Length: 316
Image (cartoon, rainbow, N blue to C red; front, side):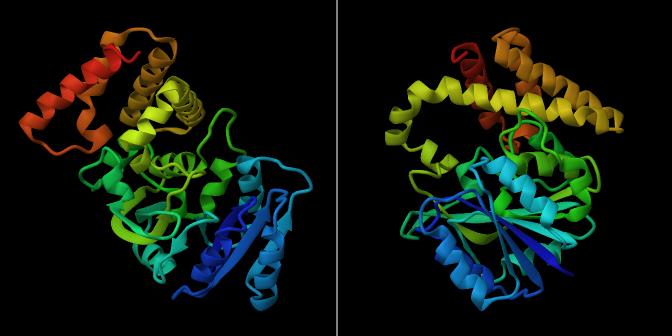
């Protein structure tokens, strides 16, 4: 089965060679690599053209102007011909079995995501996976649990995922207001043929100054630098989730899922407008296990509830 690898580039000369080498070294070889460059001003194009001459599976498209990541990614997806599509960043390193692991485990689901190892700019391990860096302690074991999680936070990392090309009819064009395409893809998969998560590590996720991960956000030094931006960041998340949930609501046929999405819309609407703090906190506490995938331990539940009250009662 042909897999289309979708890669958007922009001024990526520093790391893109290593990423391309890792792609072309995949154990699963039946793929096409679709690259769209968003009007780079460095030597990114020259690097790509060098690889283009070496491998016929690579196709390069260039934007005449800088259109932004989402518009560029929309263009790439429309050019993909494979049965499945794998998203790709320009600065990571894929493990040799990256594609093989995803396609062997996707089963009948529309989407699958896996884990990644966090590394620094020089590929030195940070001794943590992306899953460990999030507020997630157990991997979701069902599509319904993953669906509830995706209504609030995204667990499916784009560059560690694979999804069915059949989803494109529901994905494009991206709704106005969304910021994170991989979140939109995962949620659409959850309400159709399902989305799946596996804890296997299939790539090295490079953490650098232009690519801030959840792991870096929890570093004290980084936290001090970003406190003044936290309100703006939260508002960005609220706006994105509202746009995404409102866009997908008409497509949901399952009564329980539709009700949950409606409640989630009200939840983020309250947060955006700084209203109904009590109801917002209560809803989050009530659904905390499915949202955060926390273990069932009473002492952790107690402290988590205290945290929720502080977060929604004070930080707002």
